[in-house]
Length: 88
Image (cartoon, rainbow, N blue to C red; front, side, top):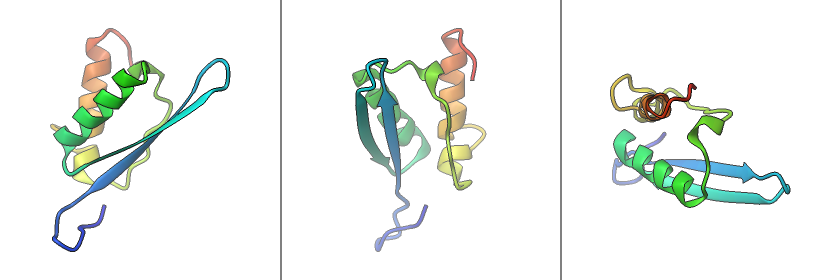
């Protein structure tokens, strides 16, 4: 993640879903912080009727908004999936 011209840290998440009929759906999610990013990601996954436990990979550059131990996207997503009875 790099700050833009106003020193605001921004991140984008690209989501690709391929269903059983090989129909591809793609979404681009952007936000400025871990909780905002998690909420945006959750909203897109719900809109696309995607199951959180089917996430196959998360790639990050080590930014705290993604990897933070308390409010990072991966931590929040793992907590949410585990709360639903699934495992990541």
